[in-house]
Length: 309
Ligand SMILES: NC(=O)c1ccc[n+]([C@@H]2O[C@H](COP(=O)([O-])OP(=O)(O)OC[C@H]3O[C@@H](n4cnc5c(N)ncnc54)[C@H](O)[C@@H]3O)[C@@H](O)[C@H]2O)c1
Image (cartoon, rainbow, N blue to C red; front, side, top):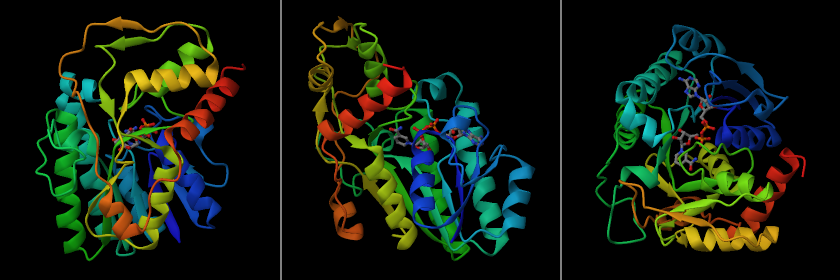
């Protein structure tokens, strides 16, 4: 298949590109390198430095006649979205619309994969793990733009007779992760602990998240390419890990013997977020292969290499 991956120079998108290339697909990447890096770009892919909001992007899609588009490019920071909701909507809503309209107009795209956020769109829910049937209650401009995107994808893809899958990721971690991203804690802790510095924990460390390893996420993108779900699907482990437990596992892997610094809890942070994955298991017959310990081992190894340790 001929596939365009937007955001393919970023953390998760680059792993998806690697997976598609390993499967023998022909892959183009479009990324404006706002947070992505050229060193993440697979050498077997063609790279286009363009903004998904631009006319240049649309011309690319119209001329290249892709079979599938996998849309990972986004403004990814919740904090930035609250500071500048317009900029968030520019990329996450208008940019997405440019991608969708180009896909529809091209007449060649038969499969569209959109990435949303299970950690954000549901809001703060008491009953965990959260299934797709739960009413989303987005609390930040980022969560709102992702949820709006889901609706645009559903409506415009069905109008244009394009199969689609919307993947609602929980907290993704792994090699190439940027500390500033949505779930940057693993990258932040790794870099500090490898260089012998003490990480900060905001609150008492009991906050729970559902950490899914990036290679499992890339595998789900492979499955969605092979058989689109035409619906929203959570991508998660359905298991919660507290920040204290995360720190303890990482400390053990690295033989790190300092205690973390506890600071006051930051306002607006959800206490517990665990996302159900029954649909993922049923629709794609897939459940994440990596345990959190295995994923953390590989991630720490990667950051050690990166830091020359
Ligand atoms: N990291 C997580 O835990 C997580 C969780 C839920 C959803 N997501 C979603 O997954 C996707 C990838 O996130 P990531 O964590 O890999 O972040 P990332 O910042 O590494 O990747 C985003 C990529 O998009 C590119 N980009 C941004 N704006 C662009 C634009 N206007 N035009 C072209 N390229 C642009 C960036 O340069 C970057 O390479 C995003 O859609 C994000 O919202 C991530």
